[in-house]
Length: 508
Image (tube, rainbow, N blue to C red):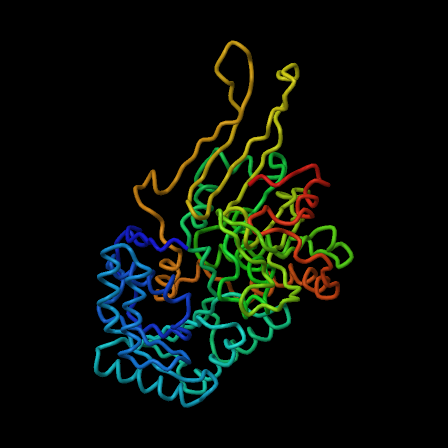
């Protein structure tokens, strides 16, 4: 992971600090906090976007004291934050971070937490607003939320808020997502729950609606009459790292597709909203997701491919296969790669295939949306003995955020020959800044109660409903060929076949 994080980004044109609050992070000792959450908080703070009395209470099972955890936190700052302004802020903020050790299922932990929060409000002029961030495994979400409710820490009043932020995956399948939503909504209002998808905080993802609806050159041809196919790829060169326990229960499909990939799909396919309010955008995203054909179980094998990486070479280094990773079964049948073909049954997208894929230990690290247009009339070029290639619109989400257009051009010279050329826009080149991780915007919006970048209960359940047929078939038919792609490759051969039978191929 790139440890460099820019402190130059803009959330509010007025540079207005977020609403004051105490941020309570359950699972503060984990990788998520030290690599993403805390650097993002430092990014906000170094840009003047946090209240002056902002503080953090961390809760985890590890036996730190407040002082020993602050020492560890400062080491993390020096390791994971490169920007001088962010580092300075992070080291100073560490003295306003408090730590509680305990078992998440122990009611006494929440009594101690309540006392600690009340003490901070009284003695440190901290806010009565509490933002609870669940940086914990999914199986603990219901327990922690229930215990917070039992300790009377979730009830709001007119002069303060209580909010919870929940990392994906939200549930394990459709049934568990419904159960979790039902349980949370017994003691929380929908507007108190922030189901996080950090991809939606990335600049390019947020720019999708601007790209589509503010540019007359795109929206008129953004439909089935002009678009041949759409591909969404989330490829990682990393393996499961230290997350074997989590990944063995989840797999690639659950981990990425019901949330990240379907959210990106909904933004590029939704109809124009009446406004940019969270309510209107949510409504349009729901409409297009509801229009996705639910794959019948007997069609799953024709519309999906799964894979698991074996030993290989990534970036010149030999790496082990998934089954040799820490905390992974040597006979594991969990997929580390998933590819789906989906169709949307509405006027705009009828018969346009959407190919979604995600995988670990791939040949490159990239998240991209590629829109391929249909061929234009090419009778003028039939005598050239070469195909006129289709135009592409590429939207780069990570690592280098930007947009490019690929089109045909004449090769200089006396003979008429064609080749594809690319016009590319990069955020870092044009605006002179490197976009942030995405968590900055997410955290800022949580503090301000803005739901635009978050999913409501119905959208979570719909995402699971779309992938449930694939989960059911894969659970009933164990794979026979795992591992079926080498680390550092493009994925399993069957993923190529998925497109080849449509006369297409992966573009990235």
